Each structure stands twice: as structure tokens, then as C-alpha cells.
Amino acid sequence: MSDSAPENRPAWKMSGGLVSALPIIVLLILGFVGPMVLVLIYSFMPRGSFSIRKAPSIENYVDIVEQNFYLSFSWSLFLALITVVILLAICYPLALAIKRVSGRRANLLTLIIVAPLFVAENIRLQGWVLFLDKKGVLDGALNSLFGLGTGSLVNNVPSVIFGIVYIYLPFMLFPILLGLANVPQDAREAANDLGASRWRVFRDIELPLAMPGIMIGGLLCFVLSLGAFSESKFLGKGVIVTIAQDIESAFTFGQNWPRGSALSVILIVIAGSAVFLAMRRINLERMLAKR
Image: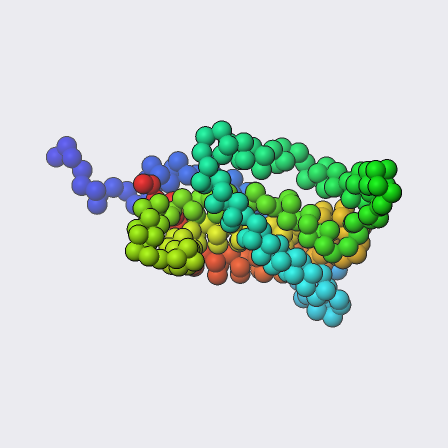
């Protein structure tokens, strides 16, 4: 017979889809899984060692528990949570506004939001320092015009929160826009025709349908904010120390790779747990379905 049955196909033969995915699979293994495994192994090496050939130990995790690293984790968690809340309050109305305008105005709004992403994060943060610091642009201008200065508006927790919100605003906005695309205008109009209030339409129609985008944006900003340290370094200038700063110090100034690896593993576990819990509630198939 010229036609071979599907069950006669060799078990080792890979499908076309798997063959096409092999390059990205190899890339993920080499560029993501490999370094993660290496960091995990290093976290069990004796403190101060630069080799993975020594006997494993949990002393790095014991040191983290015994010392005050919980303060850094607490600050990072607080900053990540407060950033997500503030970004939700800002980005949801902004996403509605962008969705309701069309043509050049929508393109202009999108361009204004995206344009800062073309400039390095550290440069943008340093620009805000020059603007907000004592004798900076804002303080100097007010002194010259009105004889009233603001003093330094940096070196405090609110300035750090402002920096994180500013940096990660696009990462919340665009997933929410994608989520709002799931809300059909016909459903809103039908609810209004039936006498539903604006709050009822938002609660029963808009919010449930847009929730996948909101959760993706919140999750993305939470994970990014959890590992942020440039904002506290530039705008905080030591007023708080995040866990990312402790990790950087362990790998660089402290030359203690095992401790830095152990801190990294704990941070990855926290971020990974948030991703796992959130992804269980997100229906990506419905969100990304073609219309």
C-alpha cells in the first residue's frame, strides 16, 4: 500500500511544530534554565566560594534568616504592592480614554506613553533627580520667579515610589488596553438600555471581561517592581535598601556569590509563586482569541 497509517509513524519522529520550536527551546534552556540552575547550585555553596565543586551547605539561607535581610524583602514587597495599586488607579481611566478616542489623538497618546521607553531607565531617573533635587530645575525656577524653593524632593520613600510608577506605567497600561478590548460596546449599550447604572455596568460587565488584562498588567508590574533597585538608588539615595540592592552588593562589592545566589533564589520563589497563583485565574485563550 502506498499510504502509510499514522500509527506506523516512528515514535522518535518529531512533529513539524516541535521542530519549528526547537530554536526557541534551545535558547530558553541556554539563556534561562541554565543560569537559573547555576544560581540554585551556587546558593548551596559555602560562603565566599567561587566554585561549585565544594560540598553543598544551607549556611547561606541560615545567614539570611538570622540577619536583617527580611527588611529588604519587606521594602521590596511593599514597593511592589503599592506600585501596582497606584498604577491600577492611573492606568485604568487612561486606558478607557485611549480606547474611546480614535485616529491621530489615540496615536499621539500612545506615542507620548511609549516615547520614554526609547531612553535608558538610568538616564530618565537621573533626569528626575536633576529636576527634583535641591537647586535643581524645579527648585531653581521657583526661587528665581517667586523667591520660594521646594528644597530637595528626593531622598525619601515617596520619590522612590514615584520613580517606580513612572518607569513601569506602560507595562500596566497596555495589558489593560488589551483586556478592555474584550469588552464589546454592544454589551455596554444593552446594559444601559436595560437601566443599569454606570457603576453596575463597570462592576458586572467591564471589570470581569477586562480582568485578564488587569491581572497580567498587575502581575507584570509586581514582578518588575519586586526586582527594581535603580529607583531607590537614584531617587532614594540610601533611604531604603531593596532586596535587589542586597543581591547586587553580594555579587559585586561583597564578592559573596553564594549569598547573592541564595537571595536571588528566594526572590525568584516569591515572584514565581505570584505568577503561578495569578496564571491559574487568567484565561489567556479567551483573552487572546481572534474575533
